[in-house]
Image (cartoon, rainbow, N blue to C red):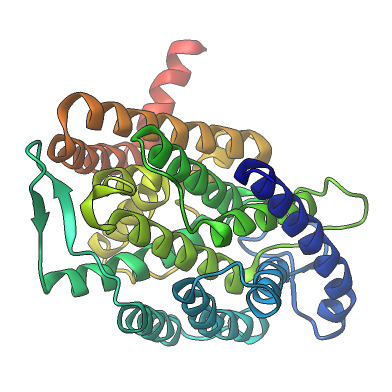
Amino acid sequence: MSNDNNWMLLTTLAGVLTLFVIFCLIPMAKKIDLVDKPGGRKKHLGDIPLIGGISIFLVLGSFAVFTGYFSNDWKWVLGVASILIIIGLIDDLWDIRPLYKLGAQTIAAILMIFSTGEYIHTIAYLPDGVSVNISQVGYLITLLAVVGLINAFNMMDGIDGLAAMQAILSIVFTIASIHIFGSKFSGGNFIILLLGALIGFLVANLSLLPKIKVFLGDAGSTMLGFFIAWMLISYTQTPNKQGLPPSLALWVVAIPVADTLALSVRRISLRRSPFRPDRKHLHHICLRLGLSPLQALAIICTLSIISYLIGISTYVLFGEITSIILFFVMISLYYKLIKNIWRISSFFRRLIY
């Protein structure tokens, strides 16, 4: 069987198993009140089980225990992710202080750095092939990147399908980049199974089957951010530039990172905690502009695709350093846009009406 056929089979199997686990866990979630109740910032109807992330974790864990599909590093990733699952479950059930969650995320990132030996040590490759290394500073950068991406996916999980679709696009962009630049996508069973499990979750999350509706929960959204962070670290820090170009890792997750950075800076400038929830995220803005959740999902995913295409085009035409500079210019422009979005929308409304 070819790799393509094998990956297709694994993706399908993971999706079906995830749906099966979701179906089995729904009664238990309702019994122990592991549900998201409407009210306040939450506009959904009825109590929705928060078991999407747990179901994905259980499916991946089953493959880790009963098959030889995962390398030791990815087994470590899955094992350490259990910390985030446990803390996320506690938060979903009883709510815990952001500082405790941040502490658990930091511990998870540190455990991964020292258990796998992987961290961000190369941030770019120059045209002559020389790598730009940041040495020991890379440990701190890795810690900030992992914790930041965990929270980025958690904050993006505000409308149906958004966090899962951002994770799916991140996986697709990563695989595409590796193939485009002539490298073989190796050691990818974990990523392929995660992709399938996410598709299975989306079927339930978007209510594509009757009478089945679940959310990721904090356990799931933080787990996804952790998985995507280590996927990007693993494939960008491969020796001899055989994986994903480091600058493209930024563009793979451009929208979640831009939204989180912009909102965090804005909250800090207003002397608020960057972890204090509000309705200022991009998906909230889309909804307040009159879009439906599905329309908002489509627009944000389209923006992610456009951002990635801009990033990869810049990398090909002008090189890695220019691609990195443009990314941070984009972050700055995004912040200005979000900060003045209502003035801009009012201006266009006056033009139209």
